Image 1 (cartoon, rainbow, N blue to C red):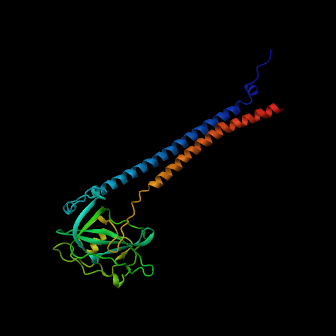
Image 2 (spheres, one colour):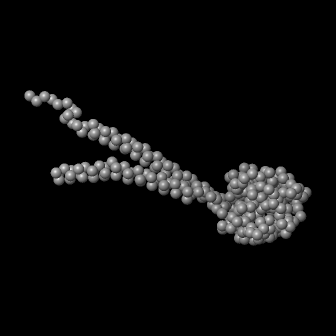
Length: 294
């Protein structure tokens, strides 16, 4: 009678097979987790892009609404619901308080955004208007371009927008004295029947990197609304261009990130199939072919 042999002698390849199955399960689990993570991140980027597209659609819809009247604008409390909507106003340009925001570009050319307070007729309220863009003088940046400002009561149609955007700046920027040719006209009244506004801080410059409306209101003592500004639209006029850049919502960035995450998902699947199925199959065929050749 033949004695029974130990299992290790009968199946010497069993430990290797067990180790191979263990590696297969570990690699499969890692691939599933990586695939779930990359697909989830890709879907999240697509959802962010969809949110931005919905926001852009709301902005476009607001711009198509009928303009608010001056009475409606004056009665407007919380302006968030009326942002980007047209408004039709009457009042005076406060030319003496015009501000030039530096380092703003239009069509890739550096220049200034020109902002002038607008005193609303029949009220004690003023609002800052982003009137347009003027090119910088590349020889002397303090030589401001000629900007025409109509005197007297004028009518204005513009879009309700957030306060002017801020650019990054290092510390407090020194004031830059304007050229004599660009000096503002005599101060205009802040509103119909009101006295002339204070001329502002002594030595302050109309050329600025950024404009904080709260600080500007304290500086000029104007009854200025600080939660919104107006953006004048339309063709070029008064020495100003008005091809305002669209809000940077970052749609392309979200779609680009989504493509990268889904590309990683595809790479995980390809590597998993190659190293778990195709490569072992090729090795097995090679060993079988070498065995038959012996």
